[in-house]
Image (cartoon, rainbow, N blue to C red):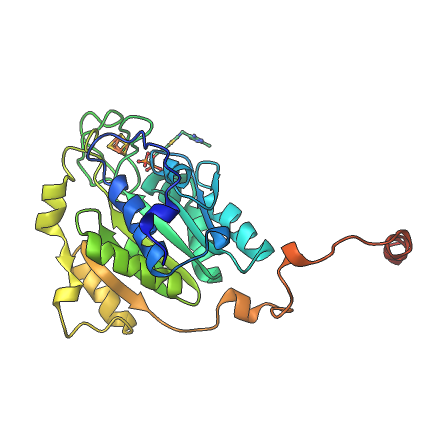
Length: 287
Ligand SMILES: Cc1ncc(C[n+]2csc(CCOP(=O)(O)OP(=O)(O)O)c2C)c(N)n1
Ligand code: SF4
C-alpha cells in the first residue's frame, strides 16, 4: 500500500515556517498515495516562485520550469506520454500574470491533467510585489499606497474559459484539499484547483485567520449542485470568489478523447527511427 512518504524525496523545503505551500505539498502527497499512483507514472511540473519549489520536494518525475510556463511544459509531457499522471503547479503570479494566456488556453483545451494554483495573492519569491489577484488597496513593496488595480477572479475566469473541473481549497483545510486533489486527478479532462495559500511573510492581510473568516465551504451546503454552471457562477459572484469545494464539474470529451490516433501507444514507447530510404521518400514529397 502506498504512503505519502513514497511521494516525498526527503529534500527539506526552504519555505518560511507557516507558509501555506507546505499544506498543499502534503495534500498532493496524500492524494497520490490514496490513488496509489506508481512513482514512475507521476510527474510534477512547476513554474518559478516559492510555489515553484513544490516539484523539487516531490518524488517521481519533476521539472522546475520557467516562470509562467508550467502548463506548456506539462502539456507537452502529457502528450508525449499519456500514461503519466501529470500535475502542474505555480503561484498566482505564475498562472494569472505572465502565464495567463497559457492558463486560459490549457483550460479550454481540456487535456487530461491537473493544475494547482498556489494562490497567496502576492508575489512571494520576489519579496512581496502585488499580483493580479491582490485585493485593491493591498499595501505591498510595489504599491506602498495600496494597489490601485482591481483583482482578477480566478474561479470566474476559469469558468468563463470553459473549465470542466474547477475546485478551490484552502491550506488551512487539509481534508477538503486532499479530497479535491484526488477528484481533480480522477477527472477525465483538465482540472484546475485554486488553493488559497497564505504567504505569512509578505501578505499581512490575507492571513489564515482572514481566509478562515471569509471562505464559504460549499461542502456545508447539501443543496449545492456542482454540475450546474449557473449555480457555480452565482456562488463565485455571491462569495466574491471566496468559496471552497468542488465548484463545477462536467463530463465532456477530453483532448485525448478527441485526438486522432488516441489509441496508439505513447510517443515515448514508439520507435521513431526511420530508415534512410524512408527519410529520402519523405524529402521527395516536398520537392
Ligand atoms: C520571465 C520571468 N519574469 C520574472 C521573473 C521574476 N519572478 C520570479 S518569481 C516571480 C513571481 C512569484 O510570485 P508567484 O508566481 O505568485 O509565486 P509565489 O512566489 O508567491 O509562490 C517573479 C515575477 C522570472 N523569474 N522570470
Ligand atoms: S515568502 Fe511567502 S510564499 Fe514564499 S516561502 Fe515565505 S511565506 Fe511562503
